[in-house]
Image (cartoon, rainbow, N blue to C red; front, side, top):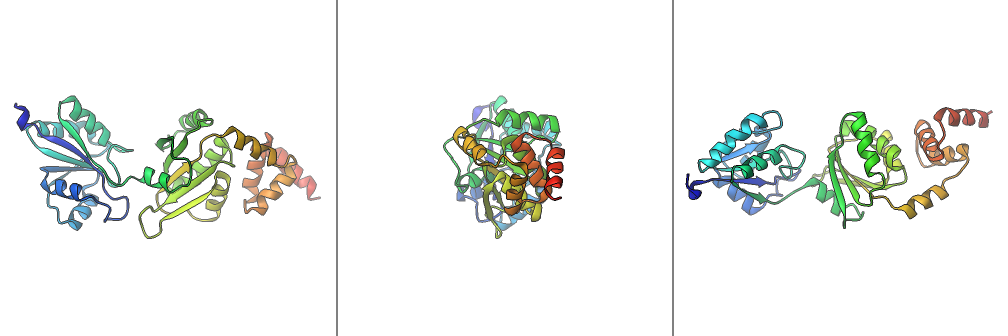
Length: 285
């Protein structure tokens, strides 16, 4: 096969909410390509219809990548131009696009980006937190052991941390971030980016947990968490009341529910929640 007949793989960004967030180049190449490899063809068809693109699409996702990936590579080796897209944002970020890129590169096929929308970076630049150094972790591991290991590893990392989270797991994740990193860490919960109800909730981790315990999380979230700062951590520790009853009362005055206030006080003072509970009972007699 001659080099001239060899195809190409494009990795194209797609909107993370607002359909207008497509580049002229991406729209053109999607229309000119031989095939679009889409995470969900039904979802992608809405985008293609919006831009009057009629290129054929095939399903390529986490559950079929091992069989579909080699098939797509064969097509590109025969001269086809394939564009890989995810449901939103950049393919290869928390989706199987990276696997297809690896297969194409191994086969000697050129891989090119079609840059555009990305939820992690969009949230980061609007967070107000440090952007000079950051680490993207995507979705945290679902197993408790692996999650604890990762959070323990990044506890004293100075870089800003970026996580993705679904609304039904947000409270659990915020609770574990509080436990691992401390409830006084500055953080931002960004949701519904580029959509009508776009929101940046800028608080500490403890305040975010308290807020979403009182308010139902809605939409997909990007969590931006400030990196470790020894001077800030020391100041926060010094400012915290040493008396458990006083600390719980202060947290409650800030809107933290009693149960969560007890948990945070126990963590801050290195005490058991049972001891905190017993001290509160004595104080209320």
